[in-house]
Image 1 (cartoon, rainbow over the protein chains, first blue to last red):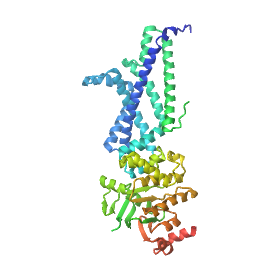
Image 2: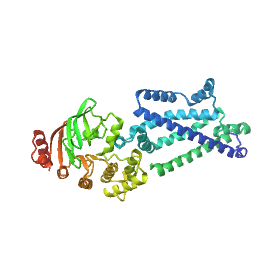
Image 3: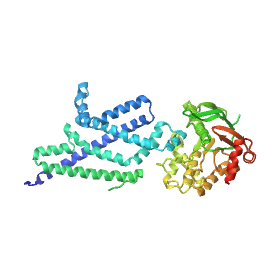
Image 4: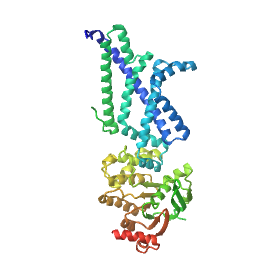
Length: 224
Length: 246
């Protein structure tokens, strides 16, 4: 390969790319938290809800697990305006990613409900906890602790998935990389820099999650 | 009418009847012990009383008030008066010993944190765990966990304490530390229904012994008569087996 690397041209854009990485992280965090909340409500419905609620949750999960995220966001971005709902690209991506993550997190959190010891539920019930108190004080902490690794993985996946937002002109890391490429035409350099930033981002997030897990939730998580 | 009056109580797991026509009276301050082979319905009776299994028939009244287990308010009122300690302790694994004891009084009974916490500390000291406030269940021995569970039940200020084979899951050398706690409670006049296989302990602490088999009460009486002069053939057979093993 007869190629001369010219990183000098792209170095000046690194702060701009880091700004994009920050936006990626925000989008991942928002959609993860919203998805986790959707997952919690759904898992509660699947475990304790009446039949119609369980059917509705099943339908939601089946739909979102069996269609591509890109199609889901296209739908929100291009089809909803027909119904008078016009959304900013960032908002459309955040909603699409939240609904998508919600389906995956429903499955993960349902597994958490199932792994809960019956004895703790009996205790909660005999102590007079209502369903909301049982979920909040007993089931949720159990899920976070027992499922900390898969939840962390889902968050990392969420960070990677934010690159889809570039298609909708959201200036997150991939979007900004694309912009710089259009200016400099140094594709190899700029995309390799973006790749390194993604790797660093993932390592930082994994380390932070492992530390929080150890300190706050007493999870025996490996930092590396 | 007894303080706790159970009349004609029946219950089933699906189609399998597990309690049939159980009638029993417990007076205030009395310690009643349920004995019998496994699957005889002893634990089930406690689960029905505390509302973990809905009765199919019969009635329960505490202090003259009928409990309607299908009515949420009545059930809550009943749970205010009963507290249960389980065989497997059933502590909340994500909470410290202190938090296990304080959580129900604060979030269910809406009492103030400071008041509840002071009381919880005193209870944990009473059951001999003054050093273990901040320990999590997985850092405690079985006997210690069971004593936290007893403190948790007492923190609800129950009128009647239900103890479901609370020493069955413990190592033999840890049994006595839990039984000592129960002796103290009996001396304090706590009304208790105890399911136990510790016959020597039952004999010592119970004022009334109820022998159950196949979901029915077969014989009731003071410990001395139940163990030394059983009347029914089934109880004779049961006590003979126990004595043979001693």
